Image (cartoon, rainbow, N blue to C red):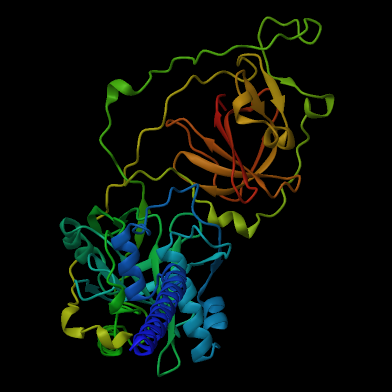
Length: 476
C-alpha cells in the first residue's frame, strides 16, 4: 500500500513538470513574437495594420506642415530625371522604393537621412477628382497632370484641403491648367511611382508646405491643410487605371489638332494671409542695442559705421558669386504660417470643371529702423565664416554681415543667400522691409561696411547646416 502511494506521488510530479515546461515555452514564444512584431510595426508604418496600431497608441503623428526654411533636404528632379530613375526599375525594385518613399512621408522625414525627391517642372492638368473616405487621402482633390517636358510622365498631385475649400479647388483645377512646380516654393515630395501598362510613368506627389494657391484666371485663393487622417489600406496611386484612361481620353479630345492645350491659365503659390493685430506691430522704432566700445582711433567721425573684425574684411572686394548649389533649391523662402489601385473605385472620383486674375496678398513685413548707409549703430562687422561660428547666445550686441553673395532663393520679403567663398554649410536668410523689393533669384549681392546686413540669430541644424538670419537695415 505504501509503495502504491509513492508511485502515484512521483507520477504527479512528472505531470506538473511537463505542464510547466509547456507553459514556459509558450510564454517564451509569445514574448519572441511580441518582440519581433513590435519591431515590424514600428519599422513599417506604411503597412495598414502597423499604421493603425501606431496611430492608436499615439506613436506616429499625422503629416505636418513644414516651415519654408526648415523643410527636409532633398533633390529636385524634373520629368526626364524621374523617368530615367523610376521608369527603368523592376517591379521588385519599384515596390521597395515606394515603401521607402511612403515610410519617410508618414514619419514626417524624421528618421531618415535620404534626400527627399521633389518633383519640379511644368505640368498640364488632364483632369481633377474629388477625394473621399475610400481614397488614401480622404479630403481634398487630386489633379492628374501630364509633363510638358516628357509626355510619358503623368503626375497625381494631391491637394489636401478642408471641405470648405474643395469647391474653390474644383473651380481652379480644371483641364488645361498649367502647374509650374518651382524649386523654391512648391516642394512637392514624391511618395509613389508606378509604371503603367503602356510604359508611361505615373507619379504621386504631395506639397509638404500645404500652402495657399491662386489661379491666373480664377478669383480667390485656396488653402491646403495637412491631412488629419490617412486611409493606408486604400493604397497608392490614388487613381486606378480606369480613371486615368478616362481622363486621358477627355484630355486628348479637347486639345487642338496641333497638340496645344486650349486653355493655359497657371496655378501659382501665394503666401497665406492671416488676420493680424495691428496694435502688435511696432512702428518704425529703433530696437535697443548695447554698442560695444570701440577705440577712438578707429573712427573719430561723429557718424557711426560698422567696424571690421579684421583688416581684410573692412574692404570687401566686388567679386562674381559662384554658381548656385542645387541643394539650395530645397530651401524655400518666406515663412509659412500654420497655415493597390484596385481598391480605388472610379465611381467615387468625380471629375469637374469651371473656371479672373486673383488678388495675391501677403503678410505685412516686420517693421524695424532703416538707416542711411554708414549711419547705423556701431557694431562688429563679420564675414561669412565668422558669422557662421558666432554662437546665438552671444548675440547681445550689434553684429553685422558683409561679403559677396548670390541669391539662391527669393520670396516677397525674404531671400536666401550663399557666399562666394565656398561655405556650402552656411546660408544667410535675409528679411527685407515691406516697402522694398528684394533681389531676384540668381542675382549677385555685395555688402560692405557702409551697407551691411544686421545679424539677428544663428541656428545650427543636426545635419551641420548653419542658418544665419539677418535683415536689411540700410536704404539703397
